[in-house]
Amino acid sequence: MPIRFDLPGRIALFPLTGVVLMPRSRLPLHIFEPRYLQMLDDALKTDHRMIGMIQPDGDKLSAIGCAGRVIAFSETDDGRMMISLKAVSRFRLIDSDQGFAPYLSGQADWSPFDRDLKGPEQDPGLDREALLHLLRRFMRAHDFSTDLGPAATADDELLINSLSMMLPFSVGDKQALLESPSLADRRELLFGLIEFTLRNGDNEETLQ
Image 1 (cartoon, helix red, strand yellow):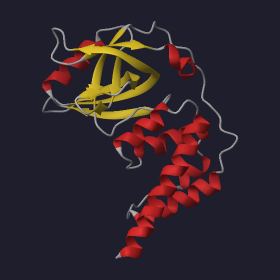
Image 2 (cartoon, rainbow, N blue to C red):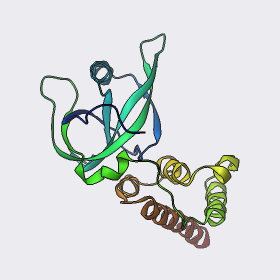
Image 3 (spheres, helix red, strand yellow):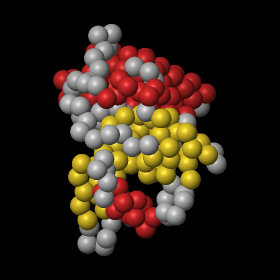
């Protein structure tokens, strides 16, 4: 479904290490710091209600982030906010500053990511059974208890993007998954990261 608002030139930025928002995905967030409560309040006053999720990169910010629109929010008794962001588009960060606000904002270049504004991607090359087999091994290796039933029937994009967001990869790996040009590219990288993690685990067990 096409968006019903213009993409803004500047957006509020929410830097979080190890957290990425993939195209057309949803991200729940728990907001409690005063500066980010102010950020949320300001975002809700705009037509677009968008917040840019971006990972720190050392003492800077990553070059690529993904903006999400606040589609749900609720306040707890102690003043914290639970929100849900729905991805709108990735963006390239041109610059960032704090200005007069207690949080960062940045100039966003949306042009490299026109595909994000269209419908869900399909991945004809996805071998779902092979992916589920890898996932079961990954879950066992990390002592995770997860029901993979929904993964068997989830849409290609939902499955690949959800795993890219949820699995405990490094900050750099998460960023590489976010920056993957297409769903097929992301799937290939996801397979590689899972296989690499499993091989590393096997090597560590062999050395012990």
